Image (cartoon, rainbow, N blue to C red; front, top):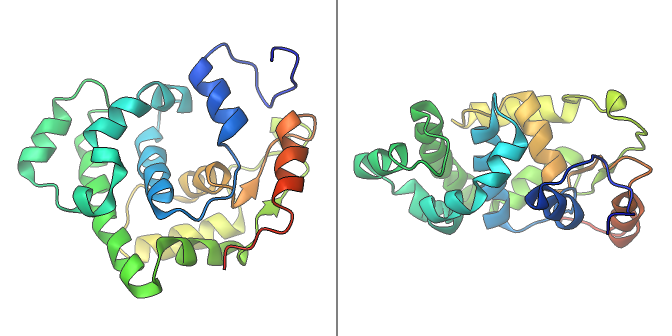
Length: 197
């Protein structure tokens, strides 16, 4: 396992497992998309490693990332979350996550699924880049800017272009594994015929 070429070097097993099994894998599962939407918003101003270390605590605090449950959170839940040392205790981020859950449900009702809405920004197929170093990877793209604008228009917050691009990378709308990484070709070949809709 140590001989594999990865995008980044780390001894953090959470990070290794995330990189090897999840990052960049295209998904149309709404609950997974909601989870990453919440986690990417929580990550703003922090390292992704910090969020991965808190991920299980987030899953417990956010009731398995069920959007309907999170949308129903009230002041008591906000107080509970603010007292939970396992997550990022930021009032604005917590309030945003609840508001975003309600907006998420609105999109599900309008489009039939959040997946159908979010995958339209890349035409239903993952964008496959061919970057050899992280200096080549953009912080956001035109697609991320468009996504950010549309999400904000629908009431979402903590969804700036940089957060949206990180979200796109996480859920496979974009394959930004570096070309020397063992996952680059695996994902590229495994999902070459992938179509979200």
